[in-house]
Amino acid sequence: MDAGTLVAAFAVGVLGGVHCLGMCGGIVGAISLSHGAGAAPSWPRLLAYNLGRMTSYVVAGALAGLLGAVLLGGLPQGQRVLELLAAVFLVLLGLYLAGWWPVLARLERVGGRIWRRIEPLGRRFIPVRHAGQAFVVGGIWGWLPCGLVYSVFVWTLSAGSATGGALLMAAFALGTLPNLMLMGIFAARLARIVRNDWLRKGAGTLLIAYGLWRLAGALY
Image 1 (cartoon, helix red, strand yellow):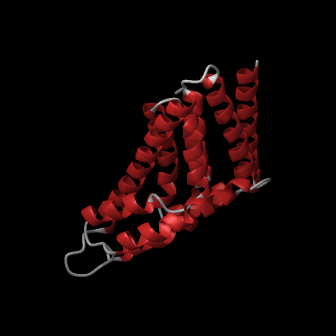
Image 2 (cartoon, one colour):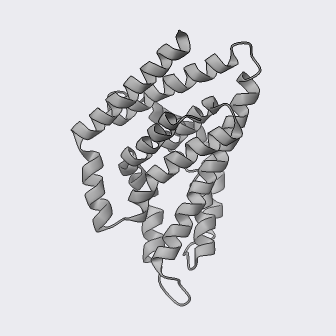
């Protein structure tokens, strides 16, 4: 797993932060505002929630990386296929972040039926009163149907190993952390930054360029 890919995954997480607030903001707000007898302060619960969420991402990434290695790694041109897959998804993620072609949002439909079965499990731990409950809720909510997360998840198929897939998803998860940890005044300021049209288009363009460079390398 090269550094450029990890940096790209982290950037996708940071710049997709507004989308993350929309998808997970409700549960994060509920955890922050949960009070009452025996309720722990909000910061430990928020941190535990995000650790649980990030853990689910890393586990999913490891599984996807292993699956990609098993399915494609043994082929005569398996490594080239993995490189091509990674390059294509970098281009698609760049188009998604720039707002030019949100085709990856359609991936949310894939997990919708499964999520309807998983989501009630998380509600059993709400209201969240301590960090242990928050970690479990985060681990469950990490599987929430989200086009951005699912796109990076499919991208990890190209990682070539369970370790590579886990690292890629960990880099993405770290990028999503600031928005979800700093909800409120700081998150509002950060949201204004990542909503900036020129910034998003610029970052999307860089991802597309990096993807095309990787694509050229895989083809030639």
